[in-house]
Length: 212
Image 1: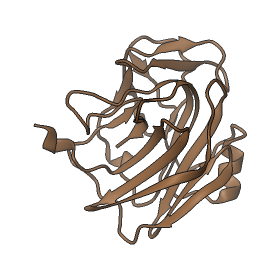
Image 2: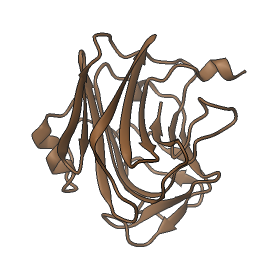
Image 3: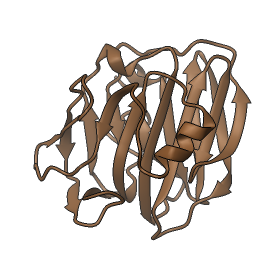
Image 4: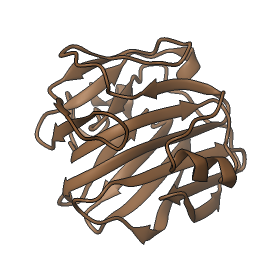
């Protein structure tokens, strides 16, 4: 039944033009496209923040868009966190992203611009609820180094020796993704979602970097 996942909490999407889109929803959905584009074959840092009513988007530590979303974040009780794909469009999975991903971070606060710039330099803040470094060579799990233990199940991504910091994971754009079981710590009232990615091929339409 596809309707069980028809309401995003928050998304980071990569579009065929190299645009990054952030999405938040609460019945009403707000979409924010980046004013700058990423290119293939290069590491880029992307981040979104939300603190009602402001949704912001950053690319490589620089503000790339801002929009009002005058509603609290909605949380879909049947939605896991997914990295590299989504189960929103078609079940079981769809919209796979062909890229390398490193240093996925989620915070339970909307970090200010100065802190986002620091993340783009690979530092971190104390409000982490999820942090994947992808530095442990494990074929089953992505290990969360935050205190919340939001470990993810690997479905296909493979290690890349040279990530932005240590190793990274490669997602083939065909059927690779990570599923993180639903936890309340991943459903804050305000948030920051950030990650490094290196796109190998842009999707025909769009694909998912992070979906909740």
